[in-house]
Image 1 (cartoon, rainbow, N blue to C red):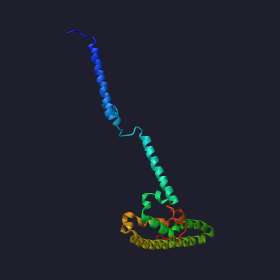
Image 2: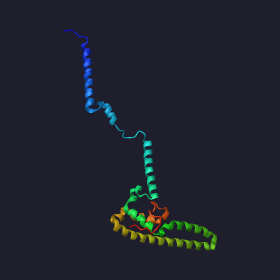
Image 3: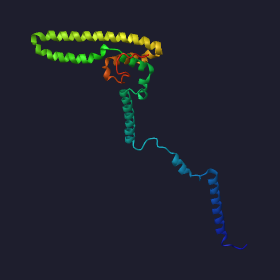
Image 4: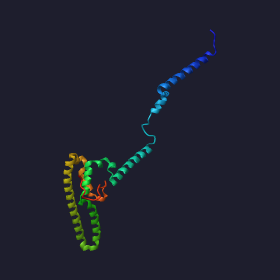
Length: 208
């Protein structure tokens, strides 16, 4: 047998050509070369915890704040489509329209309290002998107004509750709906300061 010094080189060339042919077939079959196992695993890894937790919390708070600001702006301008979900409930819209349509005595309770304090301070100028009587009269008037306003709001809620049940069913006045407290709180606020903004600029527009 004659020893050929080029036989080993030829064998290496053939093996290299075979590897190239196999790689080309893989490329044609899959459309891309098969990645190594470590590369594939590294690409599929996803960090469970962000690298910068402080920046992540800050970004989350910024997103929440931006959403809340947008919702408040929608309530301030009366844009129902962008209000919080709870404010878009049909019976809450009905409650707002009903309360906004009537004249509520309770909405002037806070101005009345401020007026009472001012009157009490001014009562100092009437003289010590009349101050106690003046203060008592102002207090009686304030409490009388408060009682009448509470009765007015209670009567309003009784009628509104029947309307809600007839239109939306018992779920609209159930305990979890908080419809009663919602109506009372809105009736307690001066109309121009209410949020969400009244849908009508003037009173008297009753919901259908």
